[in-house]
Length: 137
Image (cartoon, rainbow, N blue to C red; front, top):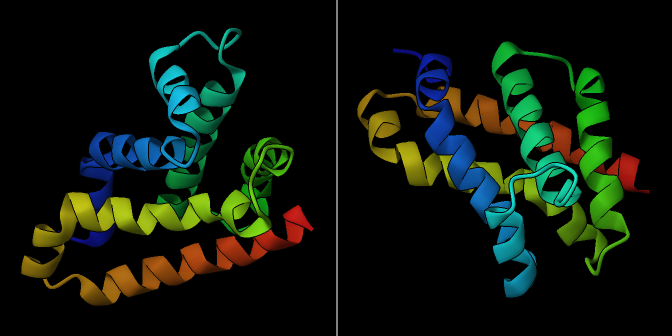
């Protein structure tokens, strides 16, 4: 099984973990609200984050160019840029995907000898983080 197949098969678990990690960057009361309230009109921040990280995840799996993913990045960065985050924290949500993947799939990645594929995937994620820096600035 390839890393792409493993990530696609475990999409819900990885996305759930990534979403939780991103929301945990907010103060506890805000984080709890964002996690609990699912209505897009009562919780536009939580809804936008959930929707756009899924778009980013799907795009990374499909090999979509970083430039084509810029709209999803822009949506999240616009929110985080006006909140009480430093620039590095505002765009750092992207790198939390690395932690989510490792937390959820480390054993199958290691056992399946997919470390080289993981490094390639993480390099694409790093490129996306550089683009996020440009968008933020």
